[in-house]
Length: 221
Length: 246
Ligand SMILES: Nc1ncnc2c1ncn2[C@@H]1O[C@H](COP(=O)(O)OP(=O)(O)OP(=O)(O)O)[C@@H](O)[C@H]1O
Ligand SMILES: [Mg+2]
Image 1: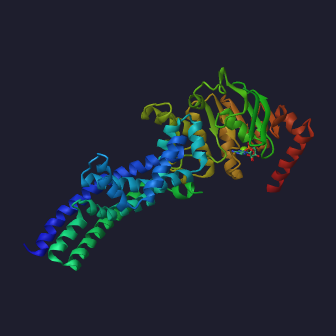
Image 2 (image 1 turned 90 degrees about the vertical axis):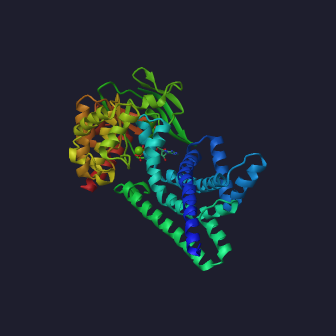
Image 3 (image 1 turned 180 degrees about the vertical axis):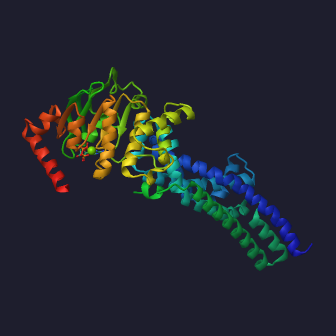
């Protein structure tokens, strides 16, 4: 088999694996990020402390180290994760910590009148958060969350370290057989670039869809 | 009905023993200088701020009773804010519907019908229903806010300087709506600086200074023949500002 034949057939599997990893990591980290962001603003003393600690820890660990802990560290205490799930989990905890920060800041930037109006109508706190605060906070946090999505696409390459057969690990192994670093890594870079380009495009479209007249100026007053 | 209400923020006593009653179908107006606790009083009545002591009743329900469900009670009180506080992410009609669907748990169709009726009552026409708050004028925003409160069928409406963020033209259209509602028998408690409006609409005017109601009575005697020096000074001051604006 020629170099390109072998490279592309392996890359195909690698791309699928990366996409599978992202398909789990992106939505989970967003949901978890929103949940933790909400806890950090509205939680009781204990919830707040725990949520802040979570963010402090996972923003303080390099993703690479978190990845090792999820794979080797957890195995030591009897929780054996497959490389795929160890990588997914590491990306989720790391990214959700960052995303909760965007969510928390957007919630805090919403003027108090919104909450007063919601409560004056008789809304319970949970209804207020779900239907009044979060739809606005999500729109404000959207650019930040979008950035995190791009980062997740790029940092998913770190999963090679625990043996996930994704794009970057394919590149490494093909290069070690054929030793054509320029071809291999340039192609790999282009694939990541294609993925982030598509993601940016999708995010732009979604942002336009979520756009509400005068919203930004009204909220950030 | 409000009895002996006290509230302090830190070491600042904002409400210092306020008592009064708004009888069913009546309109009471509160006037007074800035910073005397008018907003705080209205927020206490809607339990948006917890008073330090004193009691508040909504007919025979004691709102200050710690055992009651406050959000349940709040839906029976309509609150109209100085800054409108429309939900930025919802269209005019959805602003009015959301209390009906998420608090009263009405089905969408029914909620929409009630919302439409409410909006028409405050003269917001069909072509504005699907506009977002940022696409509405101040006067339109405030009327949508009134419709939002009205749709919940409150037992009383509280208005906190509903027109002080509006220019004179828009002020008129909002005051007109409040007056129509009052004439329809809506029990109302209104904080305002609009002397002319107050004298037309009020059954009683209460003057609040430094956290106390210092004088009360029918509009004519309060405005033109106040018994207390501080009331006279207050009216002189706002009339003068009014003249300067003109
Ligand atoms: N959340 C708060 N924390 C601390 N102090 C407050 C708070 N809210 C109001 N105050 C203070 O309480 C006093 C009364 O405020 P309030 O808003 O009730 O006055 P007001 O009569 O409505 O004035 P205005 O005519 O300017 O609206 C003011 O001195 C204000 O600074
Ligand atoms: Mg005020």
